Length: 212
Image (cartoon, rainbow, N blue to C red):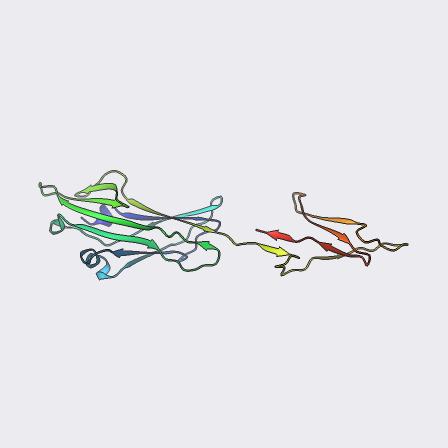
């Protein structure tokens, strides 16, 4: 049984807050015992990578076809091959990575009539069976990883200000009085986002604006 063709394994990446870029996220499949290690990628861990997906609403979702290269024969009957698939933390700013490590097992049996069967388990839950070349239930099996992105916040004219926000009030014919005039800064929806008052010299000091 050529597993990728007959059944298959998929990685579903959900990213909240921004689009998924090509190569932004990678996932490593690793054998958990000597027999499992030997069957996979010439004895080495196998890595899968995102190709990219746009935002729909506030979430980007990409389904990666995880090609394992695994093939099972009658010589494998009676054996269980166990792997873990985990996301690699690349330390991208603002990204919260999924720390889940999914366990994937392939249980190989001989049906006794010349037909080989492979049952796939994800985190100890059966995802379906391949009998010969016929897959049942919910195959291909899916491994879900959820991430989020938060750009953080920035204060304008606050303690963490990178930008100063200044204004000057002028009045003809008499001196200004401290706090005499009040000013509002509004957004395009006419919501007040900052307020300010003048001093006796005409300088207007505004409260900070926080962007998230």
